[in-house]
Length: 157
Image (cartoon, rainbow, N blue to C red):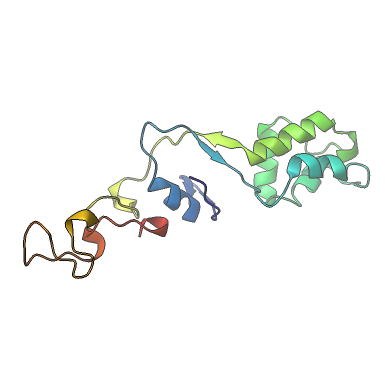
């Protein structure tokens, strides 16, 4: 699935609405996550287009489009010199940088476990309940409501 939600970087990993949303769909055997950190931008094009008019260093220009600390770490990971003037950067490097922000791939290595869990799937199947009364079709007089019913909404709720 695709989600357009906020993402939070914590000292222990990723969190926030986007991660909570995807966690209700993922299984251990899934493919890596692909995250677009700047969905409203076209960084591969914007950085190249900014070259002629920009007098900024690459790191300063990049930090106008991403949070400063993220931009600095991203440039370091990409092995690009943040102090280099944008006008002197190769178009191919800027395009690669932009594409990496739009297609960041990672494989989750774990979660915080039950202690921190906020999203849950499963429960009494809605097929086994009357949609009008929530009475069990299998056991007359037995009713189910709330989180015990297998209904998953936004953020797992």
